[in-house]
Amino acid sequence: MTLPVPTLARLAPALAEAFRDRHFTVTGLEDALGPEAVAALARSDAASVRRRARSAGPTGILVRLFILGDTLPETEVAAVLPSVPVSDGIAAGLWWRPNPPEGTLRSIVDLRPVDTGHGTRWVFADVDGSMVHATTRPDHVLGVGQATLSLLRITPTSHADSVLDLGTGCGIQLVHALDTARTATGTDITPRCLELAAATLAINGLDGELLAGPWFEPVGNRRFDRIVANPPFVVGPSEPGHSYRESGLALDGASRTVVSGAPEHLTENGTAVILASWVERRDTDWRSHVSSWIPAEGVEAWVLRRDTSDPELYVWTWLTDEGMDPRDESTARAADAWLDHFEEEGIDGIGFGYVYLRRIDGASSVLCEDLTHPFDGGLGDEAEAYFARTAWLRAAADRQAGQAQALDATVFTVSPDVHLHVSESLAPDTGGPGRGISGSGDPGTGESEDDGSGSTAAAGSVIVERVTGARWRHEIDPLTATLFRGARMGALPLEDLVVLAAAGAGEDPEALAEPVRRVVADLFMHGFLVPVGVPGVLPPGVHTAHPEGRADA
Image (cartoon, rainbow, N blue to C red; front, side, top):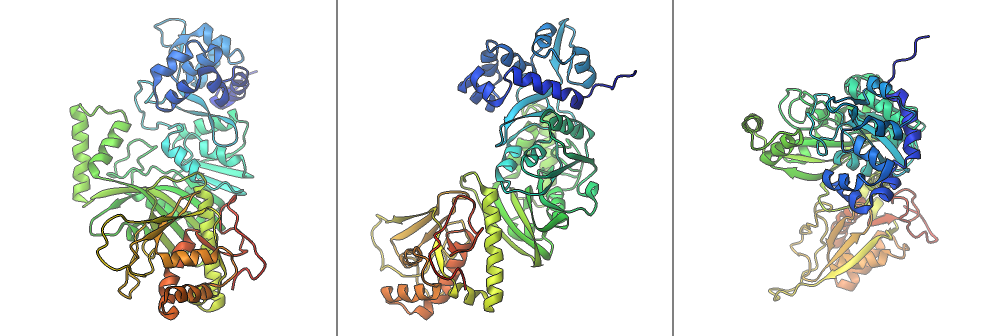
């Protein structure tokens, strides 16, 4: 009888059993190596990790073999992995015999434990160049890097029946999805990715669908409740390079392709979470550029810009990422060619951020804003709450024949995670205090605008901040703070709160009504003020009061 050819996926169950026995798990590494070495591992400090691993017994041997890429005696490897024959490991591409030195083995893959929120999972990838001297192959499969962790961190935690992982790579997003989803599908154009993703699924005892092909082609007309994508979004010339980062599409073509194509593959109210990069030019607002990728119908989009890089820093970052030495002439030539291309295309910067999409019925709506400050976990849940808020506002505006009427008639309350701080300037007073409505500028930037009446914010301003999730922060004036205090009880509609606040400030309520609505709309979009009794408008764990009375208009 002919035995099946060993593959990484076929060896995976035996590896998983041995890893559990040898405590090659997330907690096992913490116990065997200590917190200092685990921290060193996170910063790719191979020397410090190796120093601890040498005396960490079987766990340390597995760290040295699969993470540090050390050449180890074959007898040591066989002792810690007795159920994995050495010859099978060689045939499957798990390790090889360097020879010299004779009688030794060296791993071909990076194989390590990670915790994506549901306990230890093991992930197959190609050798980590930050830990081991290695040439980055064109079809290199990344492990759990910063982009991977970012996508995991910003993905909603709610249940999704079906998930598509577009460009699955090592399969970590697929593994994370299958912890809660009924079905998950991963696609990739690279056979090496599909091989390692299959091994990652197998070692974790999971059953997912893997399909070969570019972009959305492998799934045809199928739709999914959630799409996650970390595409090869590096902005550059159209020549294909490393498949994990370069798509062969010019400039930001990869991000555009995924963002514009995802809505057609979402179920009604399905959500896409995408890491994206885009070009920025001085004569074009980046918001307009990214918004142009969104179909005119059927999409609610929330785009968060995390960072902008100048061309020189961007090129240096990605050339060194592939292991090129900045001191070499070849690196200088590559940098010149890349920067010349940017100059020819009029590129002044490269933006990076997160794109959330929700499939809706009706005309599309896009909000692009900056999220450059630190934020807590749960951004994905905040995105779902944002979509719930926009859906509520659309429905309320339809019922009330307009957004202004809907806002005026709504009983708002303050989110429990809102903190209010009074800010007082110590500079000499150079003029009388104004009583304008502030906070009506770009949401999240802290900038305010004149309310159109010529007045400005008072010298003593107030800061409101949500201390969870995206940690939005707005500067408002004392009159708007009065509205906040009035809304805490969740008892009066907005139009009544405006009348009371105006009376206390000696202002005309009719003159204040429109600027107040603009402020409230911004604060509502960021979850500071929410309609009483409406579910889903705040993330799980953030609960509003539910007093007796009407929930909305």
